[in-house]
Length: 538
Image 1 (cartoon, rainbow, N blue to C red):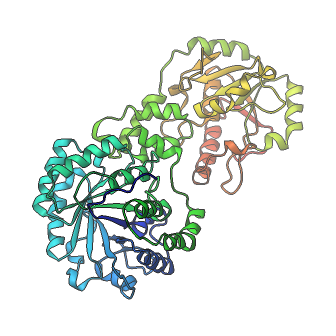
Image 2 (cartoon, rainbow, N blue to C red):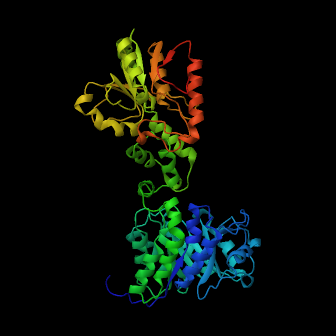
Image 3 (cartoon, one colour):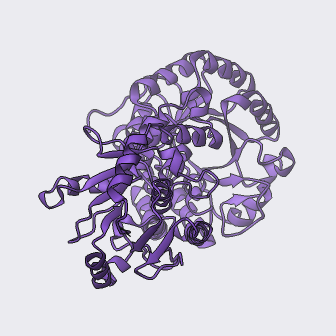
């Protein structure tokens, strides 16, 4: 792996599994696992172990690595042999009052890491000063380090120099750093911090850069002592962290360290893999999208949970978030941007008129993707042939029963079926799309104004069936037959194709059923509905 680094500096390896990994299981590792991870990491010779959060909002639980005060640390870990390993805890500034910290000489902890956002750095450093006065080694943890300009960094450095902590760490909270900008931030800190203050680095793996950036810090040309964070198997918030086992291996081979990697692997095998099999972490599309747009992951989660947007559309919305709101999540902001994006206005007068003319006096059968569209296929076909219906399917193309029209309201569904539309057997299907859906090329046969068809007061504003019903009523259609609109059962699959199922349907099932039932009852005088297949909307 190349030549050995001339390590004039001392590089410490810090394990943060029990703290950062706790975001995945609400810190409930179980007492046996807490002890096993601690003892294995210590036996591996790792320099520093972070045993969890100090948070006075939480009650003591011997099974959790989030504790209300320093006394609780002793109740969980106090009988364990720390050997030569430094033991630290973490405080998210504002979540643990100084009164809940014992003097260091009475505590099992050697040090406390304090994380804080840029806008409260002055208050957080004042808190760090009180922690230091209690005798603890203080670690200043600047989260979202990418939000700091050079002048901001220098302002923070001045505060840190005056505090004179054990270490100051760069925390790449959203995994945005590549090696060039990582090294630039390091150089600013290295050139201006007092020489005996260690510089640390905490990675997240949104861009698969955690391990690579860890190596970059290990190899940094400086005589200053350093520390690098890792966690067992990369366990941690969001896309996870740099894997401790990889950092230990690299430092053994290049920095003359002697970590017992086998003990780290034993900890992973006996304590971490069972958690990983239940709750995955690591690089994935979700965290890539957040990092590539330099925004808080909650924005991506919010948009993905709409289940109406393609990744292309999500990226377009995220690019509209500006300034400090990018990394400080603002639900009102993203809701407004989503509504603006979806409410593309178009004049659909001609489209509505043309469709009304085609459907005048005709029987209309609307087919949905519920399981009954397969189970009751004969009944549907019999109704279709008997009444010579105009057939409209919503957001899918039925197998073996080509519809006359396809009603599209959802970009994600469009992407799922666009290849079907190009097949020879589906040629001739006329596509009616709402204005929030963009065709890959050219125009749809008919485009209807999206904002005219949604219910802005409903929990699910863009229910595709109800949107079509509103369009039909606007065209003076007075009768319609429905098939394959089963309604939602929170305990079962609701679609005949598994790739159409929404992950959060259990939470919304009853509300979706109730909204549809109310709609049909309230509009019964305008629109007579016949259900060809069983439905919870009746």
